[in-house]
Image 1 (cartoon, one colour):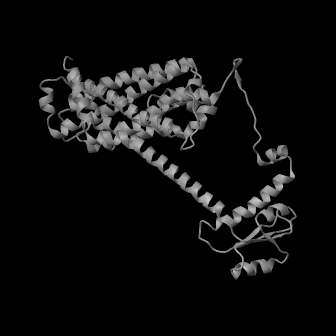
Image 2 (cartoon, rainbow, N blue to C red; image 1 turned 60 degrees about the horizontal axis):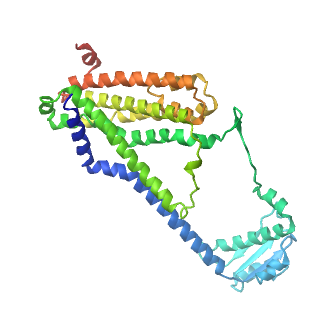
Image 3 (tube, one colour; image 1 turned 90 degrees about the vertical axis):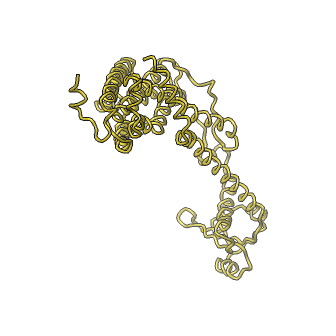
Length: 402
């Protein structure tokens, strides 16, 4: 094992020199930066276009059979009040008038008819906007602010929930424990395939024989696993740091909600459970992916199994509502205790606050025991499969040899 540090250093340095690692690591933050940039430019363009439309003036004629529109608003727009609907339409047709609004007597069952001179696909919407604004302002002027607030649905409410005699905010309580779920998802999605194919590179290059003459198979595979965990943490930092920096710098420009992390409730027990489940789950799937990659001769064959593991891992997300609403359901308990499906249910239930300490302890112990067994199997598979270049190992070969 004295060569372990050499293996770890070599694997980390070699991976960090690869362009593919940096493309994958920085691709996600860059994608989000592009999306936020597009949203920012789109919002800015929309605001500028709205201001340009507001500055524009056009001639209007109105027929109001509803009796709702206030005359003073019509006077402010310098709108002509006419009684003949057809004459208003004809004036728009001949170009003598830019727009004509017809308000029927019963606006509940009949539409407000808007006619206007074409000024382009986007700017044509200004006619309907003005027609609706006349109605809205007229109605607002007729009712009290309290009634207007109720009708518009903007009445403010204040809700306080209590749990065990203490104020409890379920959404805010989910944020810190839920970080482990998000981090696990991104690491497996972005780094899982590299874990699966990490042991096949030397086999395909036919240099594994020379490596194994100086380093034991156990030392090599353990070094690879530790280096991949370290690289995954580096990638996690590369994903999270740009998002945090971008939020702090561009929050106001992108109209993002203000999140004060200092006021978040801190439940160290739930955070500790989340970390324990995250660590054991990541160790389990790292060992599992490395084991499968060690049993296969090429990276191409190993990559074909990646989708299967992702299906096992993220398939339980289809029952996400069940995890939150019915944590004691038989299906939920099975998915929470079965090692290959447990990570997502456990971290989600822990974030939602319905994972008991007893279930958390049992599930974490199962994950840790399974991860240990898988690591030992991965070492054994690599020991016998490192020199297999043309075929995959069978279960009989893996477990039949002494």
